[in-house]
Amino acid sequence: NLTTSRDIFVSLNPHQRPDSELVYRRQIMSHPQFTRETLAGRKAIKEEFQGKNGLWFCGAWMGYGFHEDGCRSGFEVATAINGVPLPWAAQEKENDDAAVMVLPPPDLAQFTHQQNNGFFRRLKHFLSYRIPVAICKAFVTSFLKGAITKGELRLRLNDGTTLSFGDKSEVGGDDQPVTARIFDDWFFVKVATEYDLGLARSYMAGQFVVEPLEKREKYHWSLCPAGSRDETNDVIGDPIGLTRLFLLFVGNRDLASIGARRSAKQHTYANALQNASGLAISKMGSFLNYLRFKITMDNSERGGSLKNIHAHYDISNDLFRTFLDKETLMYSSAIYDAVAAPPALTNGVPQPSAGLVFKGSLEEAQWRKLDTLLDRAQIQPGQSMLDIGFGWGGLSLHAARKYGCRVHGITLSVEQKALAETRVEKEGLGHLITFEVIDYRTFARKKENQGRFDRVISCEMIEAVGHEHLGEFFWAVEQVLKYDGVLVMEAITTPEARYETYLRTTDFINTIIFPGSLCPSLHALVDASYKWSTLTLEHIDNIGLHYAETLAEWRRRFNAKESVVRKLGFDDVFMRVWNYYLTYCEAGFRSQTENCLILVFSRPGNRALVPLTETRSVTQLKSLTKEEVNAWLEG
Image (cartoon, rainbow, N blue to C red):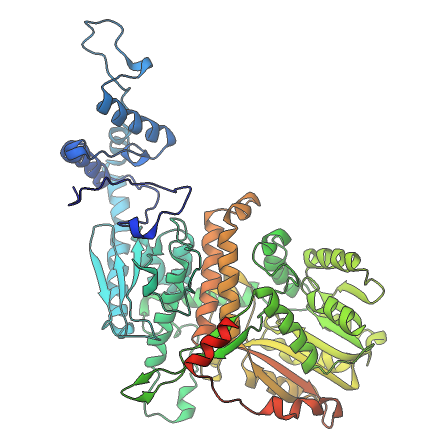
């Protein structure tokens, strides 16, 4: 039925990627949902199109979705084409008029209709599904009309209609529409009753995916590097599309905050009943999620922190190996070799840079980050170092190997400790490195640890502490730090303008991925240091954009190892959860609405930190031209 003389071949899950020039269309589908409407559609295909003009349809969806239906459907087409009946279905006698070429499928539709067509069943379905969907769909569409004013968001529904929101303008350098394919209308109920957490849970349940753009060159260059693998499949949809969806939300949210207001008014103080940003029906759901968060996910010393850490870091060491770099196994932001992209000109006026251009592998970038942390600590050969939240031991190993440091690491993850100790033994560094499962507060109370360490490094551990316990962290560090000691902290931080509201809400990360977690603001960290210790902030670096690239590379590696992940026992739901997590975070850093800071604290007058004020640390080199950037990439 296509106007072409070329034969058309449609394939599901081809063994080799088709030549992009020969691809007419790529369609994302989900497991068939058998309703009265779909059965009627299937019947229409068979009666109106099957076998017409050389067009044949077959697959499990032509039956009831089972593998046997796929076989039967294929047999039906094959026998219709060649006229040869299947051996077990051939007529036994030449005059047997009742013989069939393929055994017919059972009529499950009639059975289902009989079971579900009772008055009370239909009433229950009407009250528990149709009415909630209708009400919530009206709320969500009304909300999106006001929330998405820039760019374009499309929702493709099961009935063939498409809802569009926004003015189709450019948002964050992206001028292409974001299209979400809604497979289940209960999506509207989840979003309406739980807001952003409902969106996450709807995606986890497979109720929607984001569709890919028709041509890869339409993606923004920072999201889809040349030569990168297409990660789209029917389980997760387009993960780059998820990132684009979050960037669209962030761009429109931040546009709404612009206005001629005093700066103090920019700091919002909403609570859990106000955090739904205009989607009124979700306020109660958000409030209940917040109550659950506060009651069950506290980071107390008596088991709360241990339970929360176990929920994420102890799920499987082999899982993390599928996407972390192969050499350091660092589960934190890398620092790439990067320069700012040359600014574009609009009517001859230079515009802000479109982002960073990155070079090098994830492995190289993680080694650079480890060297940066040790440089900021101004660590010297033979010094003692405490690694709080040592992960799989990458930083501890590097400090011991490069500087001969005596390293003690503490953690609450049993699985991480086991693998880290195996790595230490393999490197022959057991005489320099010891690891311990213990809470940082308990560790600091031990008399033998008072003033014991020259340097304390905490790499993305502070997010597991919680706002109420930030002061306890700085108190603990001061107990174990020598007088001229240095604390280096790598921290994911939330902008001050949104921090007060963030404290009173829940989201996908602190509820599902890292239970009980919190990304503090820089002000909250400095304030906690001031109130609970004598430590002073001495130096700061922001590597947030490097984190966006790190997360994107983790996602690419994770999806490339899907077969390995599934062999570890993880299912479709987990594939969606992990992709949502990585893209959600990537969008936060890429939009610069989340930061990753390297902070240096010490007591006043610490001469060890003098090198951090050298010219190379406090000046900015001139930006490179487009030609210089291209030469740098080729070098």
